[in-house]
Length: 81
Image (cartoon, rainbow, N blue to C red; front, side):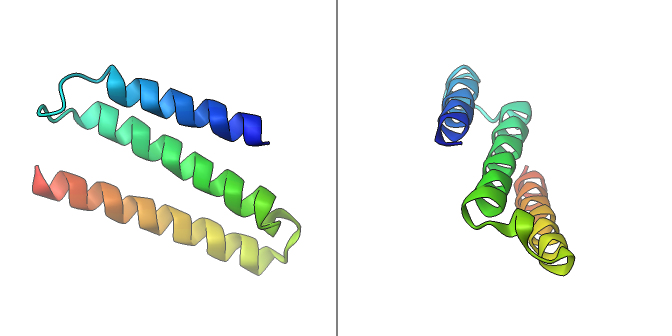
């Protein structure tokens, strides 16, 4: 599983690096990197915290928290644009 997380981290880095100059705002790159971060977070929560074997209410709560968190991050990002 660590290899998957490493590959996703490298993909995120390459996406951000190839997204243009640091002073330019590129919404597509930001969204892609945040989605990759959400996927990595879900993997860590389900695999390393073993939530995938937890009761349904805990799986739903952690997944809902993740959706709300990254929704808020995207909302704050686009609000500022």
